[in-house]
Image (cartoon, rainbow, N blue to C red; front, top):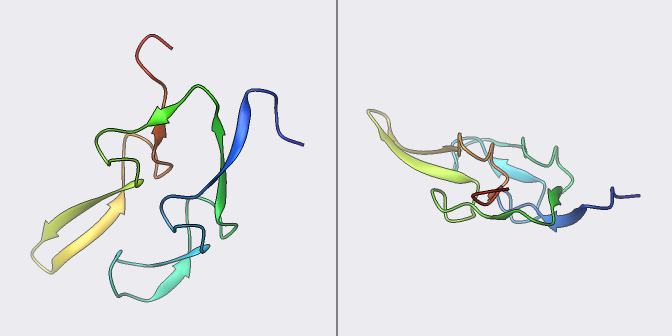
Length: 86
């Protein structure tokens, strides 16, 4: 049973699949670190999509080894955050 102020949402980081490429593109397939492989997350009903990662829960980086996707450090990969004044 979900807490009253929470609702289940599809995990934006893995698009509900429960698995993601390790580097965000075409690396080894691993269990999604955000929803722990469930494909869903619990989100506070008052939270809004995170602007920095555009609600995706990940940001793209250019590294010396090529492009890489990493968990958004502000929302911990959920894609949601508390609105100002919350």
